[in-house]
Image 1 (spheres, rainbow, N blue to C red):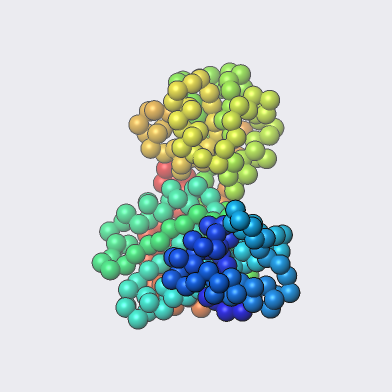
Image 2: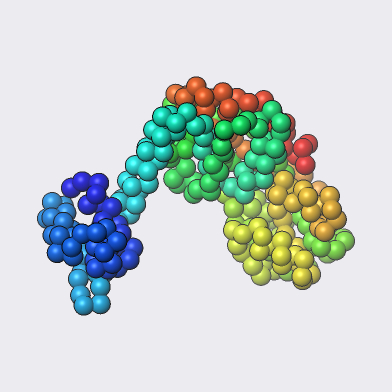
Length: 287
């Protein structure tokens, strides 16, 4: 089995059609079908169920497709890394598991000392399950998470800590905040567990990982939410959201860590150190 077979299989699994993939790949259907059959034979499984309506994946086929997607993605990153070196084009790939990561990065990248001609920052959201392996496998250069990596091949730098704030779109007494509908942000910070003693979870009317959805709902209906302060700094300054003072929230903070591999290349490490030098800690003081 080779990479091309995996690519063709992944395309067939995606389009659910051998004929469409054959046409797009400029090969005959019979040649493609034979190549897929050879792959199945080598793996000792039946990966595709063929019919007049197209193809469907078997359970084994779904597993193969998941790995094919991962392998092809890793190979694509490999080619990009090689191209980057060959073209002398600098690129720093950053992955984050939490919304706070998205909000602190503009604070850093907008600083004059960080801006450099012909240097690019590629920022992606990733699940906690994959972000560590992506870092170790050189799929990304930097990760920003709420947990410190303990892998001996990596270094984790504490960016600082942030707090949670209770917000609504109109002034509200702290004694009444538990009487309003509650919008729950589902993020790696695990807000639900941090506030379960403060909030009546029976009042939760929305649970989402979309900060935009929560902010939109806060603007159009009487409701409250508890969010990372860094994510609502602008709204609090502009006055479109009001903070409800809840003393118990002052004790609830979370850390953000920037992690990288110890063998990161010299160009990327130089830019990484520039990012760190231009970041203020703790986060809350910068909000």
